[in-house]
Length: 376
Length: 136
Image (tube, rainbow over all chains, first blue to last red; front, side, top):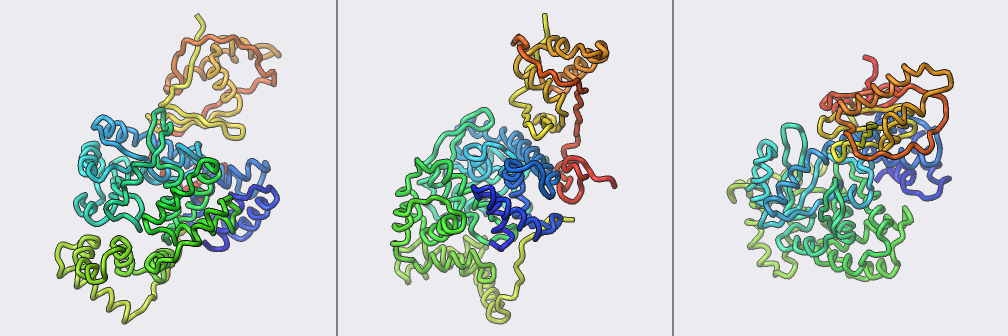
């Protein structure tokens, strides 16, 4: 999060009118609205809502109102056009859970414009994933060129599907990138709640898993700055503060080896944005000994200059087999890398790994990492 | 028999926004912007008040009755044609009609969904913001 993003987030999240205005004008004076970063752009509807509740006139109001209308339209059309997917999964008796944007709109934001999204994320059980893919495929949703379901199923936790009318779906069989090894998905199905969505009832994750998912997903560095995880998690905590089972959240973070990530994310929300998190919970979280692999994985994923696919995969693999001996881990590593990197043979995998290591030794980290801007 | 209409839900959604009402037909992808007067008529229809009652309430104050009648009837007809509202059985009495001066209901339609979704809401719009395209 850079300084401009920090100001923008304060303008959106602060409860006090004076500090909200101060943050807004500080942000507004510092940026050129035409050059706003894509990650910040996605927060404009929230900013518009917040500022319009405080005063009638402010810089760039008409454009901000237009951006609110744009996302009201875009999200409403997306949600409507993807309903057929949900209806058909139900007809085929395939259970599903709505994730991310659609779930947050349904249960927390209420207004579709406030949580911009590019696709609808649907979680199905691992054993139903292939059938669900077939069902969606029959409705016209296809993987992007160069990707197949089988390849994605064996190497990752979801597949992006696109239809001719540009309505995108993400079909998931697991949820969090850093903790997508087999078995971690079980608790999502044990912790759901029913909410109304487009005149029907759908399942979404419980608030505890909603926090863990959105925080762990959003905290990773992305070329499209993903700071929206901050208002997302704030929404969940503020709206459900009374009935969040903090012990469950702690247990889930331990099981999914996300203690370090959760601790850092919640520390930020509490220290920077004053989000009310029980101090006893934060004490419990801090008291858990830091796991080296969790810390390293967090550092690789949050700092683009330290990101390296081999190191990331090694740490995920390491965490997924935390009880195994080093020897057992090393024996299983080639097979894991071949699968997770989607290679057909061990030879290809080895060549890729050697090439990566050589490049790193030879050139170091010289790539410039910047957030994407909107087109002009 | 008086004519009553109701929003064609769930295929149509509406959201009031500072003096305008945004209405979206999710089936056709058409987007509509209603001015304050049109939004007021929409809200009365939504409450189950008949078209005839709304027209009757707008008469007076030296207005041309035929013109008011035709304008409101035509506006309500357009809502039906566009499938934004459909016939309903409700028949509520118009208890109170805000008696500010008559304003012509205006509804603006944006129908090219693909074009609207591609219209960059920062760089390609007029001062009024999306979906109003900047002059080229």
